[in-house]
Amino acid sequence: MKRRFPMATVLLSVVTALVLLSGFRMMTPTPTDQDPSRLAVLWTSGDPEVATKMAFMYTLNAKRQGWFDEVTLIVWGPSSKLLSEDAELQEAVAGMAAVGVEIVACKACSDSYGVSDALAAMGIDVKYMGVPLTEMLKGDWKVLSL
Image 1 (cartoon, rainbow, N blue to C red):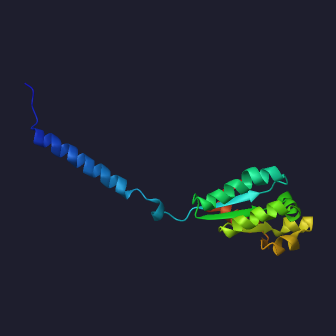
Image 2: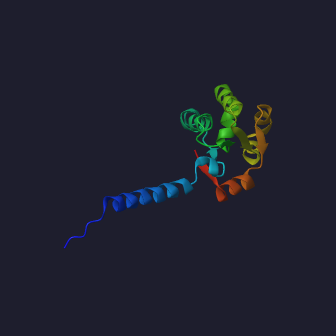
């Protein structure tokens, strides 16, 4: 003999399941409930095309489009020499700083190329970056190296 459930019992079960499921969804953190997202772009290349077609393009848009709350461009190695010599790249870096990208340069790297003063004159924070980069890598930063 088949047992039939009254329609009210079936509806009550469905409604209860939907309420429970929606409650679980409401407990899922929203972006505003999370810690700020942070991106560091480690720009190491001495190639101007890598700068304009990748490093700068993504860094600028990550900040401007709100993909990350905090965005830092780290000028490291050969990129420090390239930046000190290329007015077009200097203008692009100034534009990134204007929209809130933090620009820093590794002092050990820029000293090795003799360009620390030139980078500092552009408003770039020139400092030893070994410890700060290590903290980023060990912390909650996303690090993109180019």
